[in-house]
Length: 370
Image (tube, rainbow, N blue to C red):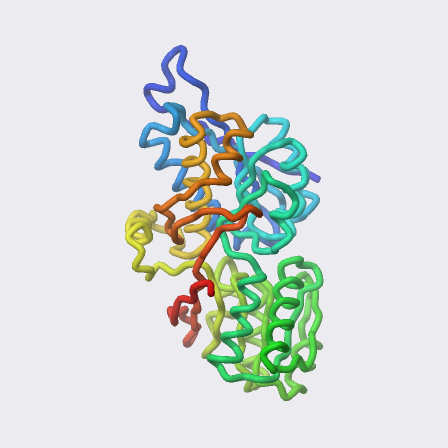
C-alpha cells in the first residue's frame, strides 16, 4: 500500500531560537485520496484551523504543535499502514480517523503502542471499547440510530421502512442495525433491507426493488452515495419519505444528487446556526472556501480537546495525557461542552435534524440525550 505524509512544520519566533523546546508532534490520519477524500476534507480543514490558531497563540506548554497529516487512502489497510507510520514517527497523539472502518483499523495499533487517539467523526460504538487510549468527540450510532428511528416514527409518523445497507461499510451496517431494532420496538415494521456496495457501478436493481415496495420511509445509511441513491429514488417516483444519518451532508453528497432533492431529512452533529457562543465565534473565523459543516467543527474540537488535556497534564507523556483526557471537561467546544464517560465517549452531545428543501439544507431542531 502506497501512502504519503504531509509535514506541517511550525516555526514560531521563540520556538525557533537555539535551545527552544521541540515541537509536539501530532498525527492526523485521514483520507486525502480515494473514495472518502471528499467527505474527509472538512475534517482536515478543521484540524488545520485549530493547529494554526494554537501555534499563533504560542502553542501549548511553550511548544508549538507539529502536524503530521497521513493519508489512509480511504481503506482499512491504508489506515493500518498510516497508524504504523504514526508510531514510527513517535507522535504524542493521533487525531483520526473519520470513517468508522478506518478508525477500527487504527485503534488497535494506537492502543498497543499506548498512543492517545481521538476520532473526530467515527460513530461506530465498538471503537472506544478497543481500549483506554481511544476517545471520540462525536456521538455514537447507538444514540444516532435510536434518535433517527424516533424521529421517523414520532415526527414523520411513518410505520413501514425500507433500509438501504452498504455491505462495505461498518458504519452503514451498524446504523441500519440500531435503527431497525428501535423502529421495530416502537411498533414500526422493516419491509426489507436492501443491500448494496458503495463502489458498484449501478444501483438500478436496488432502486427498482425499493419502488416496488409499499414502504412510507426509505432509510439511506451510507455516505456520499446516499445523495445519488436518493435522487434516483425521487426520479423513479417513490412517494416514501427519505431519511439518513450523519454520513450525509458532507463531501460529494450534494453534488452526487443531494442537491436535486425536493425534501429529505438527515441527522448530524452540528449546524452553523447554533447559538453556542463558541460556535458563533468559530463560524466567524472560518476561512473562505472552508465549508461551514459538522466535519470542520468536529476536527477543530478534537484538536482543542487534545491540547487542553496536554495543558492540564503539564506534560507530553502519553499516559498522563490519557489520564487528563479521561477526566477532562472542555467547556469551549464548538459542538458543545465535551467530557468523556468511562468508555471514552462524549457525554451529552446533542444531535441536529436537518431537512433538505429543494436541494438546500435547513435546520429543523436539536435533539438532546434523554
